[in-house]
Image 1 (cartoon, rainbow, N blue to C red):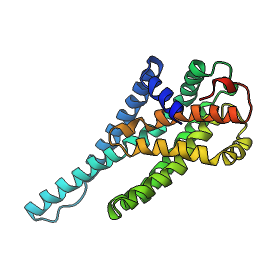
Image 2 (image 1 turned 60 degrees about the horizontal axis):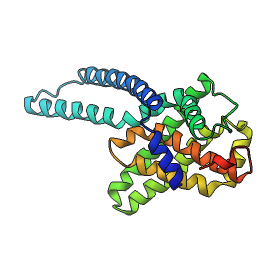
Image 3 (image 1 turned 120 degrees about the horizontal axis):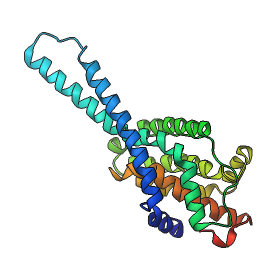
Image 4 (image 1 turned 180 degrees about the vertical axis):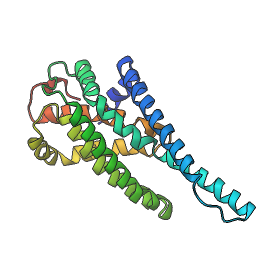
Length: 230
């Protein structure tokens, strides 16, 4: 895991990765601005109660809620667009670190969009359930947040990385055989998710990191490319 983390961090801001990051963030920003503008426009149709100070207070609170909502959506919205470049990310990692074990199966656009939507739904659902516990159960709630996110994020990012090498029907069995390693990888990704601002890098970081975890597992399975595995 330490080797995989080191390789991930060393490549995160390399030239091809910067290009992917800026493209995904550009699309994310455009969508967030659109959603924020639509939200602020919609609040204009909320009827006033007729009391000046109360109407002003309500308007300020609603506008603030829209802004907070847009901020909360940064990571999930980024998760929509990163899968469009997920195959590009995985290929760049493999070309640099595992040139003898390149994934033979390219990810299609439709498959990438589906992974993005699936990842978004899971990310939103998990955090809507887990984040309140962080505040209601200090310490223990954060542990629950890490464990739940570690399990789900590990599964999702591992399957996204494995799809370049395995048929979808075989990925689940592979993940189950190495469930502990996949879970530990997910915990690392969940740790990044818990860091404000930095967490916007989670989709890109998680994809890169889990490619290294996958190749370590491939080495354990005795597959081609084992000498280069993380």
